[in-house]
Image (cartoon, rainbow over all chains, first blue to last red):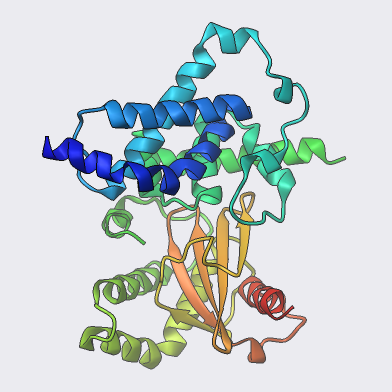
Length: 168
Length: 160
C-alpha cells in the first residue's frame, strides 16, 4: 500500500522528467509522431498500473526505457503497422521531429542513424544522442555490456556506409 | 565513468588503435584518478590530494591522456601545454555550452566555458570517459589538435 502511494507521489514529476526523453526514444523506433506519443502514453499507463517494486530512480529510468522499447517493438510487429504508412512517414523523416533538447550540427548523421536496423539504432541513439553510458544502455536493453559495445562499433560502420552511399 | 565500467575494464579487449606498451597502464592510472576524485566528497582531504597528485604527475599524465586520445583517431599525439587532465563531472548535454556528436568517429565531446578555461568531457565508444581543462589563451588559432579546436569553438560560441 505504501509502495503504491510513493509511485503515485512520483507521477507528476515522472511525466515531466521523462516524457520528452521517452518520446525521442519512441520516435527513433517508430519514426512517426502519433505512434511515438501513443507509445509514451502506454508506457506511463503501464508504470502506474504495475505492482512491481522499483528500487531507485536509476531502475525507474531503465524500466521506463525498456518498457517504451517493448511497446515500440510490439507496435512495429502489429499487422496494422506493417500494412499501413502514416501520412507524415510518407515523406522523408525530418530530424526536427526527434525534438532533441540541444542543437545537432550534423542532421545528416542523425538521419542515417534513424535508418539503421533497430538492433544498431537503439544503442547508437541512446549512446550518442541521449548520452547514456554503455552500462545504462545494457540495463535498458537487457543485454550484456560487451554486446552493446559490439553493436556500437558495427552500427558506426553502418552509419558510415549509409553516409558514403548518399554522398556522390 | 561508472564503477562497474572500471571494474569490468579487464574484460574489455585491447583497443586496436593502441600500439605502444605502457599506454594501458597509463590509461588505468587516469581511470583510477577519476574514480578517486569521484568517490571523494568535494573539498575533502582526499580530493585535495588527488589534485596535488594530478599536478605532480602533470607532465606524465598529460602525455598518457593524449596518447589515449590517439586511439579514437583524435589527432593528439604529443604533449600539449594548453590541455590538462581534469576530474570527470558527468556533465549533461543540457549543461554544456557546446557539444560534438561524432558517430562516425566513435566519440562525443561536451564543452563548457569555466572561468578563463574550457572544461571538455570526452566519451568514447569503448566506454571511456575523460575530462580535460583547456587554457584557450595558450592555443593557437591554427591548431589541428581536436580537443584544442573544440575548446576554441566552445569559447567562441559563448563569447559570440
